[in-house]
Image 1 (cartoon, helix red, strand yellow):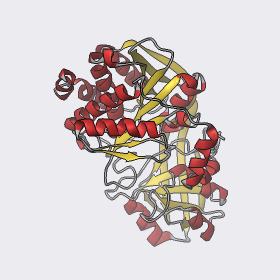
Image 2: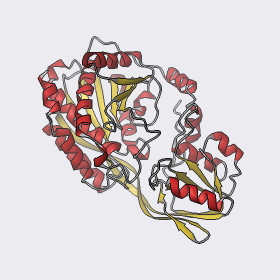
Image 3: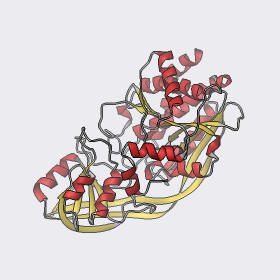
Image 4: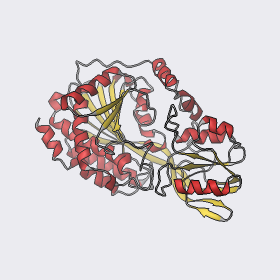
Length: 433
């Protein structure tokens, strides 16, 4: 148990988190993302991992300029959504409420500037992703899209849009705070509103960071995070904390390397925030039959209790329960599919995956994707406690005596259908089957 004391007194993960948030912007394809990847490579080496290296891949770069939302000569505060085209459009303002499919059906969106909220009602049967709401607006012949935060605090949300397989969406899109959205809806419903976005769209390069521990087996356990972040904040929660925990866990695994039956391959992906680009680049070039399990860290350290989403793979739930019982420490189990983070690049190919995040009372992202995603929201004790549990979980997932079978894609597709997720994925072009 000496490794537990080492983690509980370690500065390794928190120091790396501080280094990441101090980089500045880590937007996909920027020099800041490159610097964050280099810092992560070096941190993994210092943690005791082997063969720490960086691989590159191309992506569509997007750099924000000015954005505006103007009604009756009044300019309201807003920010552009990444992958919005550089364009300006004017139309009557329509508030589509929560942006559910039925909301768009009831609203007259043709030629309109359409606003949708970032949440759904608590009683609604599924989460509706921002990109699905944007696609519904486009399909309804809107000329621009406004994404209203449901979190109070004058915080306009960011988040990538895009159109099917195209990197750049067809209509301009901006995010506004809850307060601005409510004011515009009250004052200008049905009145002309102009949305304008300036952006530099260019070719760019992103990077994945790799390192390994354990025996030289053909099969491997992936332990992953993403190193990029949106350009409007420090990206402490999303996802500096995940990458910091990855470094902390790899340091703990280096002390427990003799306990590993299977090689552990750590990857800190680039380009997650613009369409899971880094994980898709790796998964498409990997024999996924050799990936035993993927364990993805995204949204950890937001709270003390971890939540593990196991995508219907019962052996992964069993492993989580083993760790939970061993430490007498709560971990919330969620057996459902979750198609929104880097694990999805593997699950859609039938690979068992465990998505580890914090269990919080927040609806949606909370401070995430806003200016308020900053280091002061996080606690180093939560990072250390979570890292202890994830370390033991990775050892369990690497255990040769634990049978973990891949799923066929029909099974994955049926599970998505059963959860009501297929409709939205088809609309956004994310349906892979």
